[in-house]
Picture 1: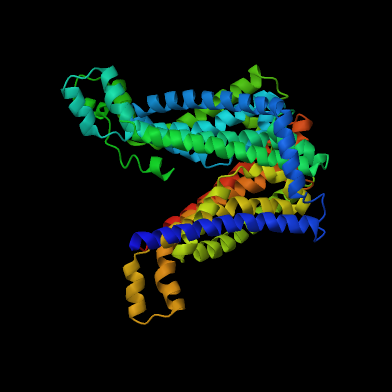
Picture 2 (picture 1 turned 60 degrees about the vertical axis):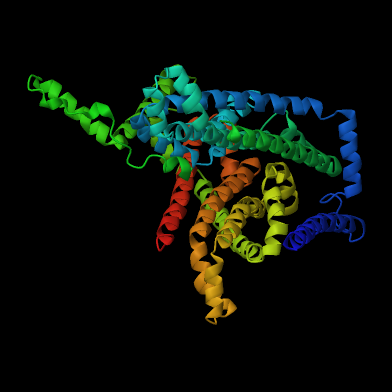
Length: 256
Length: 286
């Protein structure tokens, strides 16, 4: 009996969620079609849908997507390699962990997006400034998680492996890495999200190309339906990427 | 990063700190060297300061002699130029305006976040149905709708406040829900069986237990608000700091730009620290 009522409750929750979504869509439709909300502020959902299909079919998003994807891929790769390398070497010595870890955590607590004007001044408006900013921002969670992961490995495991005659490589491959990986994966996940957000953000604020730039351009041209279509596109893309990364992270956590 | 921070509670002193001074054959300067080493091993903060000074030194040298002065300004000049930044017409007003936007956005976020969090968290059905929605919306890239905020709220302070609120409110809702959820049901049952009214339960059972997670939420909310307001400021601004960062960038005046951004970073650190201190102070009762 309990399971049936549980099932009913889950169904009711789903119904509420779907109802909420439908209500938003219906309100949006009514507001634009009947209540006279200015089309320049809020375009009609049907028009947005048509534009969305049009954008997808014509492939007009490809050049901007390529720019954003390049920036993101380079930035995340740089941040991952540098973050894990630096984090690993810092974690080798407990003393340096105590020296550097609070410093890195302190910098991480500042909103680094503040430094965007400096990056623009130094690297220009193109890809380089976005890559540099994305790298900087995602470096910190990755390096902090790597330090936390490696320096929290149970000492007993290390001693046991050593006493059984494990070589350095074996120790790293079979003890340190499996123990640290779940924590590092958490850091990579945070780094992934904020690198993507900061790159979209810096494209929005100051850039020459990219998805964020295109949305701003459409906003400035008051091409609202198409702008909404692009927003939907970016939101769906990011949601998809997040889902993929969550899946990967869950797999990495289980890895032993 | 509480995870990383709690990772090293008074880590064992490294092996190198074995006492070498017992060796009577050590000469005097070697002994002072050894004791200096021991001092540094015991006080990592001093070495940390050294690292910071080293970074500043590298920056100073490279900015003075290696890099085009149009792009980077050495820290000594930035420090000396702080006064001239503050006397630049409009900068103090811009800093005040940004601070005002941050304060209002944070206050609104806390009020809405607390109300929504309680409303969602106290009802199991509401929690199951609505928390996934909140998490979903929180996970979306809000930066893409920044141009919409400017269209809806104009380029003044209102759009910055609104954008700050949308960044600050979600972490607060989520942590308040989590805090209410962690409440032991037995406490509610016993309070109710002793005849506590709804308000009394809220005031004496739920609020005290929510405080640690509420302040954790306030801390996350504060970083969200900082991010949202600063993003909106940098995007478009007529009188706030965003206006001046753009102006200093376009006129290739790195000294003033570094100074202004340094001041903002200091402001962010102070605000974060205030909320963090409050969190530690108010969760001590446990």
